[in-house]
Each structure stands twice: as C-alpha cells, then as structure tokens.
Image (cartoon, rainbow, N blue to C red):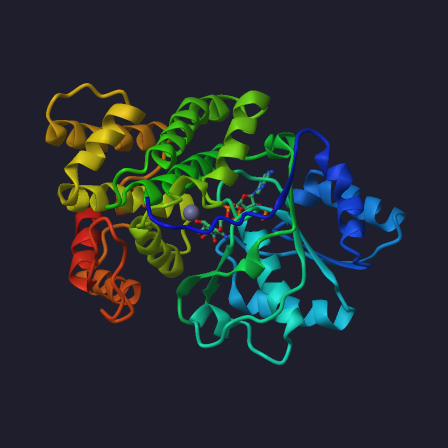
Amino acid sequence: MHSFIYHSPTKVLFGPDSEDHVAEEIAALGAKHVFLVYGGGSVVRSGLLARVTAGLKAAGFDCMECGGVQPNPRLSFARDAAKKAAAFGADFILALGGGSAIDTAKAVALGAAEPEHDLWDYWLGTRAPERSLPVGAVLTISAAGSETSDSAVLTDEETGVKRGLSSPFNRPRFAVMDPELTFTLPKYQIACGVVDIMMHTMDRYFTPTTGNQLTDAFAEALLRTVIANGPAALADSRNYDAMSELMWCGSVSHNGLTGLGAATDFSPHKLGHELSGKFDVAHGASLSAVWGAWARYSWRAHPERFAQFARNVWGIRAALDEEAAEAAIETTLAFFRSLDMPTCFTELGIGVQDDGVLAEMADRATRGDTFVIGSFRPLRRADALEIYRLANH
Ligand code: NZQ
Ligand code: ZN
C-alpha cells in the first residue's frame, strides 16, 4: 500500500427531504448572499429550485439565481456567472443539479473569489488557486460524484478542450443527497450515471499497485452494488432502494476511497474527455464507448488484475488468468449494452471518424505527446491513437 493523505471533508445529508436543511447548513457557515447555479430547467420543472429558494429567503438570505448550465459545462458560462456572483457580493455558491451544475458552481466560486484572474488559468495549470468561496450541492443525478470530489471539469467551447482541475478548494462544504430528487431522471441519464460510477471505480482499480486488500474490497463491493442496482433503477426510476444505492455509490466512487494507497489510471476518462470535448457527447456514454478498446489494448500489462476483476466482480470461474481477463472484458461490454450504452463510436452516434480526427484527439489527450496517460499501461500518443482506432467502428 502506498502512503496517502485522505481528506474528504464534505458533510453529507442523505435521505428524503434532506434539502430542507440547506438554509441551516449555509447559515452555520456564516454566509448571507447565496448565488444559485443550475442547469437547463429540470430543477425548475421539479419544483426543487422554488422550494430551496423559498426556504433561503424565509431564513433571511439574499439570493441570486443563475440557470442555463449545459451538460459538458462551458467555460464562457462559468466566466460570466463568476462576474455576476462577484457583482452580487456572493459569499456562498449553491449548485442544484448534477456534475455540470456543481462543476460550474466550483468554477464560479474560484472566479468570484479572485476576480482579477481568469479562472481558466487554474484549469490550464498556469496559476494555482489561492482562494475560493464555499460551495454546497443539492444533487439530482447520481453520476459524476462531483458533490464530494475535489475536481471540476470544464470545456473551452472555442477550442474544444475539456479539462479537469483537482484542488482542495473544489470540495463542497456539504452535499444534499435525496434519492427522491433523482426519480425524474430519463433512462439514458440513469444509464450514463451507472457507467460513470463504475468507471470512477475501475479507473482506480486498474492499477499496477498490488497488495491493497481493503481498497480493492471497497472497489469490488461498490462495483457489485452498481451492477445489481443499475438495471433495477432503469426498470423503475422511482425504486427508492435502487436509486439510493446508486446515489451513495456515485459519491463514494469519486471521493478517493476506492483508490486509496494505489496509483490511479484514469485513461478511459482522459480518452473519453476528448470525445466529449469534440463531439459534445454525454460523459458516461463517452466512457463506455472507449472502455472496451482501452481494456483490449491494455489488459496484458497486468492480466492478473483483470482476472481478479473477473472473479471478484463478475463471478467468472475460468481457471487461467488470461481466459478470465478476456471473459471479464466481454461481460463488462455486454453489461453496458444491456443498459443501451454505446461500446464503440457508431453506437455513440458520432459515426466512423477519419484517422486525422483520431490523431487530433490522441494529440490533445497527451498534450502533443508530452504527457503520459495513466499507470496501468502508460499511454503515449501512439497508444492513444491505437485505442481510438480500435473503438472507431
Ligand atoms: O440541465 P438540466 O435541465 O438540470 O438536466 C440535466 C442534464 O440534461 C439532467 N438532469 C439532472 N438531474 C435531473 C435531470 N433530468 C431530470 N431529472 C433530474 N433529477 O441530466 C442531464 C445531465 O446532467 P449533468 O449535470 O451534465 O450530468 P452529470 O452529473 O453526469 O455530469 C456530467 C459532467 O460532470 C463531469 C463530466 O465530464 C460532465 O461534464 N464530471 C465531473 C467530475 C467531477 N467534478 O468530479 C468527475 C466526472 O468524471 C466527470 O468528468
Ligand atoms: Zn466520470
């Protein structure tokens, strides 16, 4: 087990009606001016925004609403919203929604705390954040895990560059997780969430680090739980038990616990971000579309790891590691297909791409071959290109 620091300070309020406690949580942090960030309207239609805003106003808070965050949230929106939040004098940023609203809220918090700097510099790594405003999240979709994670992902829509920023400033102060708020999700978004939750876990689990029993056991249990509950949630989005399991798995999958003490990989995430950046496809779908190609290209680096995944997650009984590993890849892909999730580019809906497009994405993912992706099988530009070619059908 490698040395690690584990600090996951987000306070979690889990269960029906936990959103009723938003005002007291913000009051306890001493804030007065709440800037609310949300997406394209689901929280308006469900009545959540009205309920939370009414509760805040009744408790004496000044509120300013900022809706319109798009999935794969845009840099320009975050920049504008940060200016509005600073002009309003916001001292708390509250996100209502999923990863896109929460990541935008994190960006707004950074941008409004240091308005003299362009917030994209933090994402480019040319400047380190020194301050931020506190952020809270009311979660409405189990997927990205942003509600307890230290990262935020933005897309510069002018260049198509999609990039994540990991920083302790990105940890929300609290996360409200009421599974009933996810009952209105369309099937496609539930399925995208299932894939994303699995992939946060698998992108940590597929590691060269060995001898990490508890972390492995956490990851395997989480994957088995998602595999058991994902289909039940898809069959009935009002199944409280299934939706609550997914919601808690989503947070634990990305708060660091399932990768403690090990090198992380995150290659499918990095390769998937290029697909979302270029084609604006849903994050979860970008991951399932590229995972099979990544796995087939990479499993021989550590066949025993894929064999462990086969036996402990899927219950595959093959005696030989190689046989188990290949069966696990096929079983995982069949599971994605059973959720109607894509496993190649045509299923993703982007068609077969020219080699030039694949090369451009491989170049970006490796920042011109200056950045090696992952640790399970470290990937250079040529490797990334080969994986995109394998998924390009
Ligand atoms: O915009 P609205 O109208 O709210 O609709 C959203 C959106 O269309 C809808 N939705 C959400 N809750 C709903 C609902 N519709 C009906 N009922 C509800 N209860 O779902 C759609 C997707 O929402 P979005 O926030 O984009 O989904 P998700 O949580 O999957 O977030 C995806 C973004 O998070 C990033 C992804 O790259 C992507 O940009 N990620 C962020 C991470 C982080 N910060 O730690 C880690 C992840 O790996 C991921 O990269
Ligand atoms: Zn993800």
